[in-house]
Length: 514
Image 1 (cartoon, helix red, strand yellow):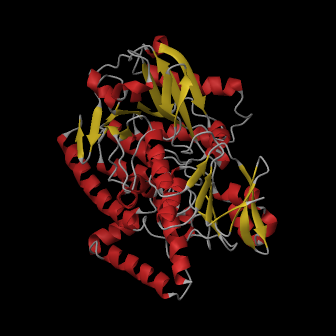
Image 2: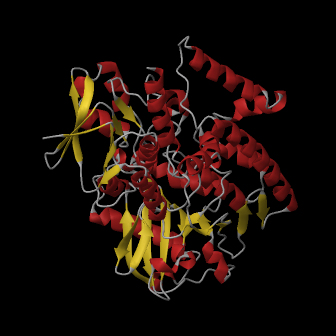
């Protein structure tokens, strides 16, 4: 016996839930199947020690798209909005950045930062315009595709001759050259470099890191927020909206096969042996897992399989969670500063040196770190008087030489704590429990191939028109009825919802055209 639906979504990550909500609101009978026991994918809150909870992977909101909020009428409660980034100095003299303002730097750097942010915001807005629509296909004469390409060209020209030339010059460049040219402050250069490479297998000197910096700004001009209750509050709200619209969401239901019959999808089968039928299947899983495992290479043309197989999608970021018996002491910070985002990136050279070992399959002995204390803003996450520290740490290559053994994990955790101890000398005595998630752990817990939170590197050859690969940038795969809606599609990762929204609109638009 099978159940039939208008659409089945494999995976209840935030993009899958956005897609489900929009399809259900259009009147479709939608089923979402999530392998884990809670929805949200990598955007979940869970306990990691007795009484201590944390956003397990993604821990800050940068990019939730206004169009997603509007279409689904979302009401996301924030514990903190427009957080300041504090670049920690080991002498207690820190640099602070929020919006277009930088303090703790020279007047010349403050002026230069305002100009830099103004330009980058304008360029990010240009990119952001195209995040909320499927990218056009290249090499076709279809009027819709040609008109979108023409509009992109006109939008670039509207920047003005000088800014257009600067945009085209910068888009493929590295962030290192830009910050060295513009700024004097080592901490300012280090913090901007970190923002450009966070979550990537890139260093500040790598090409495309101006683009990855712009990508982070394109959601909400880089405005940083922390949801109350952690990231699960966002995904639970998305699930509530989808259910209210009529979607069915089932957790603890791992899909093991997307059924293909006579060249088109016919449904899915689960680990428990259940089958659900639908002529439309939308995978929120990454492209490699979808094509190589759930569909099977035999159902897809060899050239396409080859392109998917060679997607660069090995993660390089780890997540460290610490349960603390109190806040650590950090020279130069007041208590209220623990509500902000702290970064350890002393200068651009430090960030590049941290990346160097990862090129050869080794972790960073002196990593770069993004730190938050979510319990300072939200007391529900830790026992009274206690605190949680949540940190993203780079670089931790997925394919570590020798593998991520307990010894290797212990060594990298110790290196990270040493880096933090340089600024918070009492951190070790504050720790009552810890958890380190390497990319291998992220792969296992969140079912992301390679443990890469973008489902694939954000580089010009894996971006926009060719994301995830050439010939599949408009969410439909080369099997009738099969779509992708996750971070491996345009525009990419981050908790934005854009990919899920774009996929839903592409499916509904295709049905309307038919």
